[in-house]
Length: 315
Ligand code: NAP
Image (cartoon, rainbow, N blue to C red):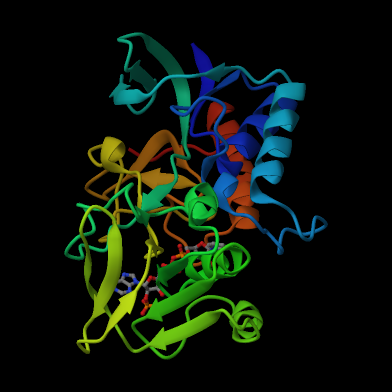
């Protein structure tokens, strides 16, 4: 039995594992993607992580992982298929079942499973998924060297994607439904200076069309744009399906918790003893590497309090 099982190996999970090891809490990190470091690996440029400006997301993720490995954090390369709280509030243990039918027991769980990209539900999106429609510019951008692409969305991901693709592609359309961007104004300013980036604002894409390959996109106004690829950056969906009967979720599916990562039972009436949440899957305003790392430390600190019975848990 572990003191703590961390589910997810992004910045939040790895941070929790490092804090666990340093506090002599027996811990294992579960990751369904072999040697994964979460969504950060897909960010080409992380420029706001204190002390490490101009970092490549993949390399930063690798540094986090190396830190955990240097403390001999064990990694379980499996997918969690079920989490069952056993016992009573006073002697709670979590039984975690994996996709290979093995099980582990843990006194506490740090749930740091992150979030995945939101689909746009546009005509043609499913048909051309993987054949011109992508949700990851860093992964697929190289296929569009000297070609024309559209990036959909107005958050930081869309802006970063447009910036990344502008270095590879001949032309990048950035299509956003509003005039104001949700993402960093500093990136907007940088994009404005790029001659091969065109802003298409107050527009929605209604269709992705083509034959074998994508030929273009249709906009709500009726206009069409010829493009070879479409990068959808409409934000993310929390990976919380697995825990929806254990802890309280908000309307968007994020696990409800404060900075301490302490969760409530699914009906929201009391605390869920020993179950903590960290990173992008938690309800919060700012989803960044720095807040994920901070979450991991806070959640583990709460777990330590719980394990030593100082946090307590009301029935
Ligand atoms: P986001 O901030 O939620 O932005 C999603 C964008 O997609 C919004 O502009 C939204 O439009 C648009 N959108 C969503 N559904 C749409 C629809 N059906 N039709 C048209 N447009 C739609 O998601 P994100 O950009 O992935 O960022 C998530 C978090 O990660 C943020 O906190 C962000 O700051 C952070 N992040 C940081 C970095 C970095 O620091 N380098 C990089 C990536 C992400 P509206 O604006 O109109 O709602």
